Image 1 (cartoon, helix red, strand yellow):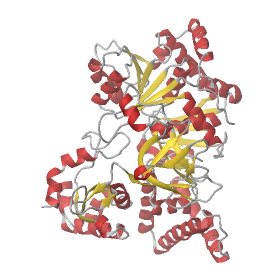
Image 2 (cartoon, helix red, strand yellow):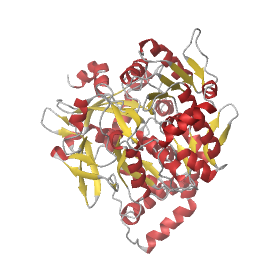
Image 3 (cartoon, rainbow, N blue to C red):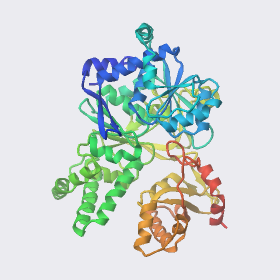
Image 4 (cartoon, rainbow, N blue to C red):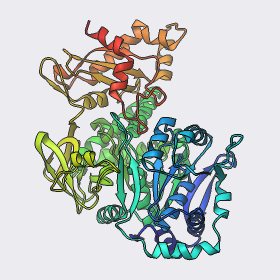
Length: 600
């Protein structure tokens, strides 16, 4: 049941409709089971948060931070804040002390909710740098507080601060809520420069909900597995959308447990990034490789035949030949159900994916497996979706879908994708110059992505700022090349070097367990990862795979030199952002000597 009410009212209204039905589930690691939360209990917690915030003197449109991994309490804090017209600002659970201090000071935050020990420790380390900080609320009761800590209380203690006498003020605030109110400020992690706080209003969310409601067919019978952090606008918007539909939202606390969670909750829908499906694809290929000859032929035959059927007939809404339909029917009866059971998706309804380009091999595979992946495109500044695949219309491989209802898209100078509509941010918090650069006088938001429109579908070609120009004058799109390389199960991460260089080179982070297994099978000895990555047979094997992966690239786009790195790019070394995007400048600086050796 769709409920597009203001978020100040939404949870209470859903509780009136659904009562004791399950709204949320989360895995309790101590009990080893998934614990349900009813709509009534959800509404109860939201109301308690609203009263407690009133008790702490939180003002209308005051900024509150939520610094946590995904937990039900994140949603209680969000909707409790909306109920009294406060603004929540989510921090990535992996944020550093410096990042936390910057956001706290930039947004002048007095109160912050923290999740587990890591976030508490980081917040306490940042506290002396946070000029406005007055209080910390800890979600996890197992967090060990530091000696002398006078700032923090546990979540239960915080809830107890709100009493019946605070309800009247909460009711007044709720009744005065408007769609012009700011709901969130989301700080973009940024691959270069300082973070910018993107303002998201309740009217932007409302417009996004209305647009999706016209296209998607998710309803209150669906089970949603939450995977991406709530801090990410894609997951935040998607989860809120599912709450308006009355779905059961299963919250995955630890990202590395997502495969296990899928097999336990059997979701019908889940938002994700392409890298997730790349890993699933690699796992299936690995399973085929290790199986018997018959298993290998069946799995690879099913992927190839069902993938071709989807791409050439189903996606184009064209009738297929009888012989092909018969082959597909066989694979869908004998092979595909086993694949889907192994993945944990027996029932597939809607699996939106965005955040990066989806390679044709992966898109074809997911559809071959009968999983209804919905490729889309969006940004924090557009409340996520600008475009996505429409189920009842033609889908073309490589497109990023059709423009969402109510949104305008046009192609500007340098083929830049420009967006206008009610989901576009009014600007960056306290950054008028940055806002003026991003949103022109006519209201068009400049995405920084190059692309084109064809037959009603949108295509993205590259990030304009990431477009490299070699010293020979050739333009290179590094993300295209990196996307091809990371399809391979032996390659976990890749960074391309080409700007102002004679040719393309690459830094490759391998999938270490697989590489170690390969070396052992070849009888190679090594004492460390450094030694492993320098073995000539290992480098030759990776090079052969790179050559196969890039064979359809133009000669000037192909990698000519590469190195295998003994350690991954990480948050700790500030080589990747919280959304796992590469910080190219940091990587280039850290490996400057190695890169120069490619061109010596």
